[in-house]
Image (cartoon, rainbow, N blue to C red; front, side, top):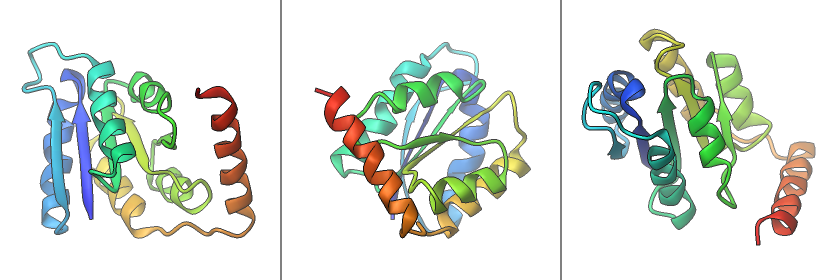
Length: 150
């Protein structure tokens, strides 16, 4: 599995921790975004990187990190085909996969610590989409995209 990960400067340190964890899991990582925690980098550009990689098929899933996770998740969800979930713990990470077939997870580098982030990453990559009634709802989301993303 190929994973695209990007962050702004506020998420840089946590991104480096998560990237190492992904590599230890044996996943291929496409790394993008800020080059340090001190040099300003826009969460808009980081979100575009992750979303573009996933939509194009270059990556199977994405991880987007900014200070709070809010701005970068908004950016990712502006792309047709992206279902980016802003998560705060392993439960929300598990549910976004199980019920929403989320293909991008977002969180805040200034909001959660590395232990919580790694627990979310494990849940996000272990959990499968439950399909069934949830597939109908994901289909409904795609129908909304067809109308609103022209």
